[in-house]
Amino acid sequence: MKLWGGRFAKGNDHLMEDFHSSITFDKRLYKEDITGSLAHSAMLAKQGIISAEEGELIAGALKEILAEIESGKAEFDVAAEDIHMNVETMLIAKIGDVGKKLHTARSRNDQVALDCRLYLLKETDSVIALLKELEETLLTMAGEHTETVMPGYTHLQKAQPVTFAHHLLAYFEMFLRDIGRLNDSKKRLSVMPLGSGALAGTVFPLDREFVGRELGFEAISANSMDGVSDRDFVIEFLSAAALIMAHLSRFCEEVILWATGEFAFVSLDDAYSTGSSIMPQKKNPDAAELIRGKTGRVYGDLMTLLTVMKGLPLAYNKDMQEDKEALFDAVDTVKGCLMVFRPMLATLTIREEEMREKAEGGFINATDAADYLAERGVPFREAHAVIGNIVLTCERQGKALKDLTLAEWQSFHPVFGEDIYEFIAIENSVKRRDIPGAPAPAQTKKALADAKKRLSEA
Image (cartoon, rainbow, N blue to C red):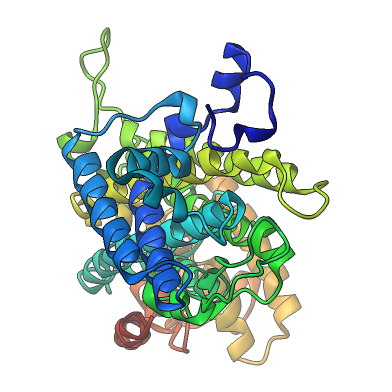
C-alpha cells in the first residue's frame, strides 16, 4: 500500500505507476534528501515533537541508508514513486513505526523544494569553480599574447587590428559576468522552504531557523504557499546557464573559424579533434562543434521551465515534477562543456605569424589613415570620404595602402606627409589605441592586472 494510500480503494494502473514515478531521475537527490531529513528529525527531537531516542534512531538509520545507497546496495522502487518515499520506505523497513514519524510536520511539497535548493547550491558552486578555472586559463594565454597582432572583425569582415590578448580578454569579461550572475542568484537560492508543509505550514511548533542554520541557508521562506510553489531559483539558474552556453558557443564558433585553412590562426590539439571515415586529411573541431550544438539543449531546458510555470495556480502542482530533468540536464551539459572547453582552449597552437600576416590585408588600417587626417585638422567626415576614395582606387589597382607613393597620397589630399607610412603600420595602429579598454599592449597589461584582481574577488 502507498504511504499516502489511506483514502484510496484501489491501486494505480501499472501505466500510471510508471508515468507518475520520478525515481528514475530524482534518485540523484538522495544525498540532499537524507541531509534534509537529518536536520528535520534533529529539529523534531529538539522541539519535543518526537523523543530524543526516536531522533537518534532515525538519524542512525538515515546514515545507514546513505551509506547503502552510495555503496550500491540499496535498490530504488518505482512503486515508491520518488526519492522521498523511497528513503522513507527504506527507513520504515529498518526501524519500523518510529520511521513513520519522520514525516511529521512535513510534506513532499516542501521536501522537494528543499532538496532542489540544496542540490542547486552545490552545483552552482561547482559551475562557478569551473568558470574560474577557465578564466585563469584565459588570463594565462592573454599574458603570453599582449603583442600578438591579429585582425579584428565586424560583420565577419576585417575591421581594425587588435591583439590576441585583447580578444581573449573580451571573453574573460563575459565569463566574469556569468560568475557574477551565479553568485547573485545564490542570494535568492539560499532560502530554506521546509516548514511550508503542503502549502499552509503546520500546527507543530517547528524551529525553522534551526533547520536553516543546520543546512547552511541564509534565510527561511517568508510565505508557505510561495515556499512550495517557487521555482524561480531553477529558472534563474537556467537563465544563467543559457548565457554561459551562449558565450561558450560564440567562442567555439571562433575557434572553428580560426582552425580552418582559410583563417589558419590556430591548430587544435589531436586530443580535442576527430578525423573523417572517408577523407584521410581531415582534422575536425568536433569538441567545439559539440559545445556549440549542446547550447540548444540548455536553451530548451530554460524554455521547458518557463513554459511549465507560466500558467500554474498556487500552490504546488504535479507539473512541477518536470523541473528536475531540465535542471539536471542543464547542470550536466554546462559542466561537461566547461570541462572539455578549457583544456581544448589551453592546448591550441597559436599561429602568430599567420595572424599578423592576415592583419595586413583588407585595408584594416584605413581608419588610422582617416585619423591621420583628422589629427591634422581635416574634419573626420571629410577624412572618411578621402580614405574611402583611396581604398576604392587601391582595390581597382590591386594595391594596399602601404604600396602608395607619397605623390599618390598627396594627390588625394595635400596634408599627407612621409610619416603616413609609420602612422598606418599595423603595430603602431594597435599601440596608439592607448586608452582604458583598448588593445594597446600597455593597456592590455593593465587590464590583465585588473582582471586578476577582479577574478580573485569574484
